[in-house]
Length: 328
Image (cartoon, rainbow, N blue to C red):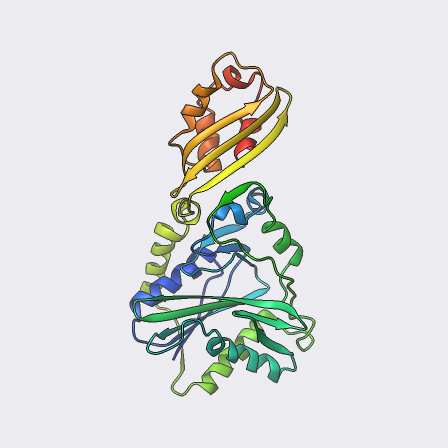
């Protein structure tokens, strides 16, 4: 088994590293550990905008990254240790999560933490979740990755993943909001993320014959960064990959009440738009609706695009930011 401690806390880099390692080491067993700066990791089949509090995420500079595996959205920060097992598929039961969560449980129990696998893929302590796990099968290998909440900022976790459930209607997988906890209260006093990571590495070296610690080379780091730049940091992957969804939002501005209903295709392209409200328009609102069809449901893009339109023709005295809020 190759054990890798990522040199980066960048979520784009670390999520990209999983795909890179899958392609570069098709036969080897790998145990990857990494810590991300504040970020939200989205399941492959989720509608990103339905999972996050977009304004909060932007205001707090939280990165949003879609991973290769399914499952729900999770929040990462420097108080959260992440692990990833890569093993040949062989005859393994894809739905059995216990094989790769057991080392985590064993280590924690050796530290007098009453950890246990409950349900399909969650690790709990005293009935509260501290680790969620996700899985994928590709190119003859299984990747199972999970989180370990050690000293994460719970208030940020709750706010970053908070969203109005009435805003989106889609067929994507919704995250299940579970009661979660940090392990800091259960671990020996003074235990840090780095210390627990070191203990886990030592445990895996001891329990896996032939296991060794491997440091990514300079060229490998460059290749992972290239993949992060070209895929995992892009809007197309993190937002545009979302499935078809319907979006609705109503706002109140000095010009009146405005309500938008839009249908968005996979890829983030606006397909249909209907605007309602008690505002006054000097031009048919249908003109504005037609201008939006074929555009990306991306706030940064829409801000630039709306700046090219004389919005007063359709809504009276309004600003770009006021109308932009209609699409958040």
